[in-house]
Amino acid sequence: MTKLKITAGPFTFDARLETEDAPKTCAAFLKRLPYESKIVHVRWSGEGVWVPLGDEDFGVGYENHTSHPAPGHIILYPGGISETEILLAYGGVDFSSKMGQLAGNHFITLTSGLENLKTLGNLTLWEGAQSIRFELA
Image (cartoon, rainbow, N blue to C red; front, side, top):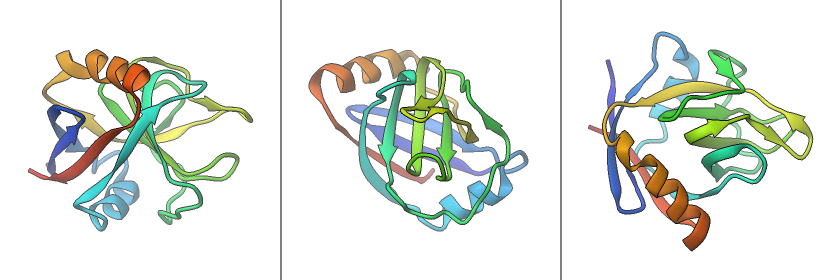
């Protein structure tokens, strides 16, 4: 099992890559580690934060995809109808864009720090973009 450390805003989370269910997505993401960006609050999807990635191509299609990630699940939308993005659910999410319903590849699951997710989501909603860093644990 590949373990990650994710630092988002003032919080640190342990996580695991879902290599059995999303092997291509995990492999593409591993090549980019350490990965740093900013998260902003989602626009249409509910209680989540996202990393907008424009037309970045991870070279993957759908695998282990869902429109309803659970809190602590991270999905990659590989692009197509809307821009490429990474989304972290902190509560109820119905993954969508202005174009309608989307599905993303569930490829990371947080394994610690879940009690801080809602605070991170509210911080991002009310105070704006927060830094995020993904690295091997």
